[in-house]
Length: 281
Image (cartoon, rainbow, N blue to C red):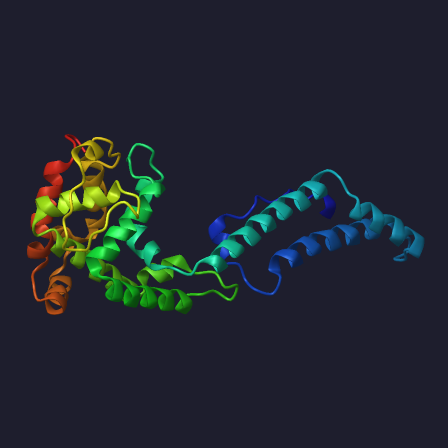
């Protein structure tokens, strides 16, 4: 009987993000209730007829149903709550360049053994901004936000897979990666600068992309973000720029854009980062 159909599993986040417009979820819930009502009316009919008193009694029973139908309602209510929460969060997003920059090492943020935590992101973004420069960074931010708008679904969500494949998003990330890699040409002073930034509150260090201002020795002893974490973070950030990742066509396009071979831009940095990595990592 329709009222005893199995309760569905709650939709995944991805399914909810991409569901069709037009109240599909509510239609689905109403459809199950209506079909249950029709089944019960069919069973109660005599010669194809049902009195209004019987209709009201069965409708009230369906509205106050327990068991499988009640469980069905509860599951859909939970799914709707999750969907509305996700939609509210997505609509509050106004800055998408951070998503572009962190995407290559996003898995590290969910790995408690990586040593890379979300609390490190604010200082990492500050370092990136100083390396790139305020005005160029704001231009990249604007382009990232425009790309997000191009990939809005009818429900105002962002289709993330399409967003990350967007040609301009790929170009934004490459621009950031090249700027960071080139800033590490003088590796040791840049490494010290980077670690100072990563272990500082925004107000405790005043510096620019080419200014290396050391902290006091006693301050360095309290640092939490260390060389091993720096190596792990940057190796993940630059993973798609390893030499084996370049096809001849991609390498030619890279050289045309940046006037240099990828191995010259990233090669020395990979060597230095690998030398900092813990043994066996």
